[in-house]
Length: 258
Image (tube, rainbow, N blue to C red; front, side, top):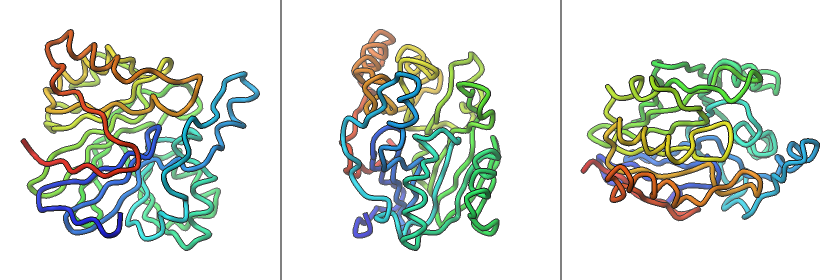
């Protein structure tokens, strides 16, 4: 990830499983979005009778993130703000800035992250890291344990606009909060409960008129999985099957404007 060269006007994206991604810019800035690189959710799911044992190992270790330029969070759920990723990362010398919504910022403070490394974000607020511009978007939480979920619009100069939905339920207004920013690529959560289902994700893609749609949050836990091709099926039913794309886990793909 450190050796990769990204052409001007492009963004490189590497999925790490669940809703975890690495992003790299033309100027060489690296961001991690919701890195979940442990198996900590196994213990979270056990009391509920939910199997959240990883189906595949993380492509990298938490310490491998040392050297990134930003640590982005959408909310506080354990598969997004993962202490078993964050703590080894910090012990190995990893630092912020940590870009996060309010409740995630509060959790970071309780962990001893210095205020100087925390950048609070909320819908419509932008943060710059190198040549990346990050803009938080509206998201609808799963439950009352964290009411400050966000998604992210990510761009570089003369490059595409990437929209990462984060965890969010469907609402008829959801597309309207993003449409004016003209996202090119949609990275959408799909999972059986609490978030967008494949039909809702396809409808979001249609209303946003994106050029590509990439599913996430469907591939890691036995009791929270969906075949990603269900998203393709729903897109095809809307005449949009051609914009569906899957990415190889642990490998960078480069996106530009089309």
